[in-house]
Image 1 (cartoon, rainbow, N blue to C red):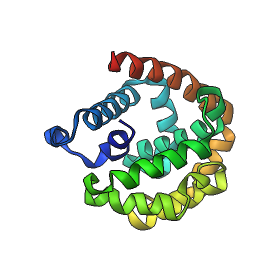
Image 2 (image 1 turned 90 degrees about the horizontal axis):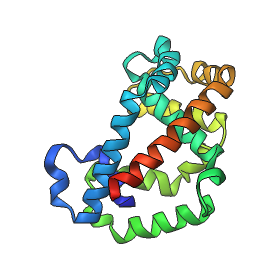
Image 3 (image 1 turned 180 degrees about the horizontal axis):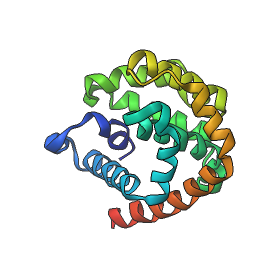
Length: 177
């Protein structure tokens, strides 16, 4: 499931059916959570904060910022250290590397060789991620603006993230039943 969730954005339409059942579940669960994000009015308020400089990419920035807040709140929601979680993920990814879509193979190399999760631990790392995305994905190069938004709205974004995460975790658990 972890691999399915990781590759989900690169697996379009019904192509998820080409994978085994547990990877299919990971892809479908990831899509379900994306749908929850898209429908959540409070998350939409955060996305609006980024829209002046990021336009149509504001949702992408919100996703990155939520990853940052996930790491900030990691111990609240996980019984495993981030280091052990990432170690297990990397082993799982290596074992399943041959089934990764081409785009995700490149991204996996970026994650592993650059220790990308370390970037998500502080706002300077988030700025670096946004700078990289402006070079390789074409989003506006406005990382200073994004960091100012995070700093100016830290408590609000953190509260929205935590409320959303609790709901999403419950929905994800129910999805598996």
